[in-house]
Image (cartoon, rainbow, N blue to C red):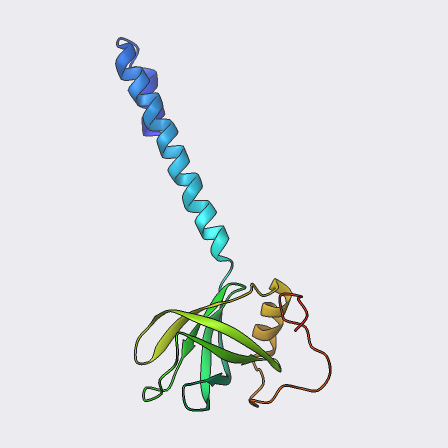
Length: 148
């Protein structure tokens, strides 16, 4: 808005007007990119879902503190080591995840395949997931919709 006001008042010099227009265009592009990045991350849902994850040694209890279709924030036991890619149990399915960031207490992970929004909302609404490391019986589909 300030750039547009300056553009209107700057009628005496064509070079200044061109610079102002360029500035206005660049500002618009940067704002559009910021909105696009936020949308690409997907809506994050805060939660506290207890589930299981495959550590280097065995399946261990973990807690999901927020989740989206693209990834999650995972609370992990301090003394347990995980590989960069490991499996997570979600509603009876084994879902591969990759660690993006982490410390002694938390890991930020992305899903190898995007989950459906309906699946994520159902997990958050139910507030629970499988505590068992064993898959449920029957044919299952990945929450992205793909066959497992």
